[in-house]
Amino acid sequence: MSRDPVKILHILDSLGMGGMERVVIDVANGLDRNRFSQSVCCISKVGEAAKFLHADVRVIEIGKGEAADRLMPFKIARVIRDEKPDIVHTQNRSGIDTMIAGLPAKTWRLVHSEHGRNWPNIKSEPIKSRIARRLLYHFSDAVFTVSGELADYFCSQTGFPRSRMGVIPNGIDLNRFDQADRKDIRLELGLDGNHFVIGTVARLSPPKDLFTLVRAYANLRQSHPQADIRLLIVGDGELRSSLQQCVNEAGLSSEVVFTGARDDVPRLLGAMNVFVLASLSEGMPLTVLEAMASRLPVVASAVGALPELVDDGVSGFLVEPENPRMLADRIAAFYNDKKMATAFGAAGRLRVERQFNSAIMIGKYSDLYSKIIN
Image (cartoon, rainbow, N blue to C red; front, side):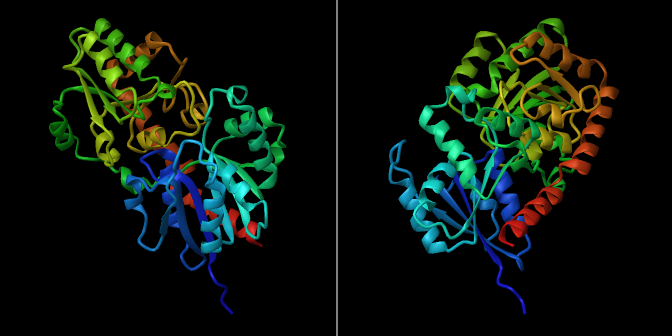
């Protein structure tokens, strides 16, 4: 006798163009339809990445009012009552409101995932939020992060037993990152075929520290005045105008391309020669995995889970955060040695194929849901 599919309700803020959202989409699209039925609830708005969900994944938009929406737990409770899920899987901040929603009569299993730090450290987080996070972990049937470093961090700061916090690393669909047509995308962006393109994909926000990348590029231009180099910045955010002003003041406006938000990241990665992420903090950034899948050597800050992704001296270089000179030196190493850059890129692709592909990630979530429900 066949069993009805397990009903899973994913809850997150929105389906924007970020890494966490991409993971939710890949899991929702990739799980066996005969075993799992899924819906996605967006607390604030649906977001532009919702178009990547398969048609049979139901999307619900609650719509957030004020920044502190005290009615949100009741709104979530109404969605849960209507959807009747077997498992509710929350991401980051959505977990606390969902926990409150389940306090009166929780008849479903709760899985909570942490994808990164919302605050520089737990002590800078409001005390009410810190207490709620601790309660959430104990209230959940399973708690997971995307990296060992992040699990160690949250457990050390909250006192939650490390043995109870699991890790499911992010993974990506390798088929999306076969070699793009570099000539076409560069032509579209106003870049020449002979340019050595230093690129990044990131939200233009303080944690990504794009100013250090711009300063590193300025240092590189100073040390290599004749080099055919360009800087490609993919993404949007609240610091865009400030970054553009910084670029203009450095006299680099003709060499730096801002694309804004894009949904064709694999094509844009194909325009790059090296990928850089100068973040101050990270969870497990999908952009680095995507760059590695695109056979790009990587230069990244040694923060968060990046040391778990980038094999220093093999698939890329790890650098100190907020150190533009060190960042420029490591980028220059790839500019000066193209064969090394190619070898590092190949090593990164192999690492993603073996450890961080979406099939592995989806299989782990499938096992988790089956274990929780049984």
